[in-house]
Length: 561
Image (tube, rainbow, N blue to C red; front, side, top):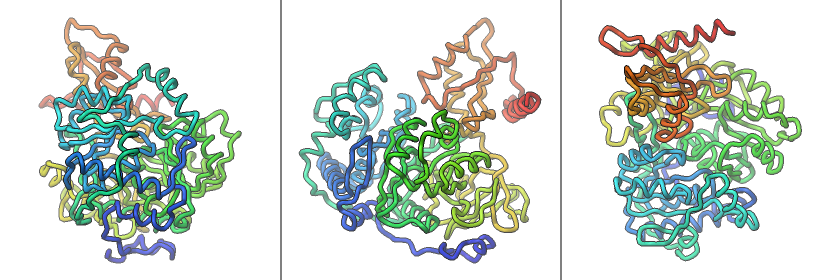
């Protein structure tokens, strides 16, 4: 239980300062919901609908099948899927079997995939058919033993399931034929032939991991954030209290946020499973598709990122669509511009507020109130049982309004980083998670972010870590030095800019360098702007002054406004 804080005075009566959390495995809620709402729609996917009873049945089949392949409690199962029924079934099936889920971005290139599989020690992966060549190419360098392969068409209704392979061939210029073998398993065959019997794992919710969620950092390679069952359950139960007007079994949530990102996983997938909400799944963001889906399916809740809302508001056909079903939205991943908030609320008649969190906190720690006092420009106040403070570099707590590093404490805070005690010790101190974000708290307990201690770039809601991009640039034989920074972008919030110094006597065109990066990085990490320089600004000991480059960029932008 947290002590009474100044922000609690602003809590509406419906939101408690402290909650009694269920100390149960996350997957146990699927069984409870399937029992309470067996025939209710659990998800809608491009015309395909499944009930909670059907999702639970297929998750049990997958759990039993994984165990038949030799899965033991604590083994890691990677899931490399977009939002689709298989993503939900795989996640809960793996948890039912006692596994730890490793969410894997389908956009990852081979080097990124290989690193994550090796670091996590994943022995199993569930992936899309079009991603199988990528998995196959890295498999020999990893501990993978079994690959379960599915396709978007597997859960499409007739005749879409017949048409989709032709669309796939046109869009991706590939047709992948998957054949069952000792270590390659066809999803449809698994679900059709497996039985529902599995051995329930003996899970301690507070100690046992449910998830390894990878997040990057300025120190180089991404780190596996260890989130327990209790971390994830607590954050969803906080979320439900914040959304106190929602009714179990009655809401519909639009699932545009990817489930391989912790924000979409918590606020859409886990929230829906725990409270009997219907998920409307969309495998990727396309503004026109989202507008059509909102009008037709009438979601009541729509968690998103500013770029998603901006994309909809700027769509030329926006006025053709009825978005009035939307009642509540929490925006995360990047600062929410006031004009975007106001325009979206005008279009939908619903409420859109800014929240804050990070992978290490499952992810939400702060938000503005949806139906009560909110402060523009603020990330809001801490959630129930969540404490937050601002610290100076000396370790002292700041005064009200004084800028320092924001730290949080609560039941949603991670156990630590997987096999990385040094990094864990850097951010977890006496139960406090130091966020790396610089900000302050006002006298009412509302928090504000002013900058990031880390060099992380947030572009379109994606976290991009400069060193990872720089390492790729350095692999190009023409590049002598490279530094990457986030520069302002009216649509993505920030975009990736590379400052490059070429080796003497070498030449490389921007197009060629861009193509090189695209071969080694997910598309969202690839620099959008390249600036070739004779030299980069450095300190006396040779460290590149990234901040000076960013300041120069801001000055240039201000002069051109």
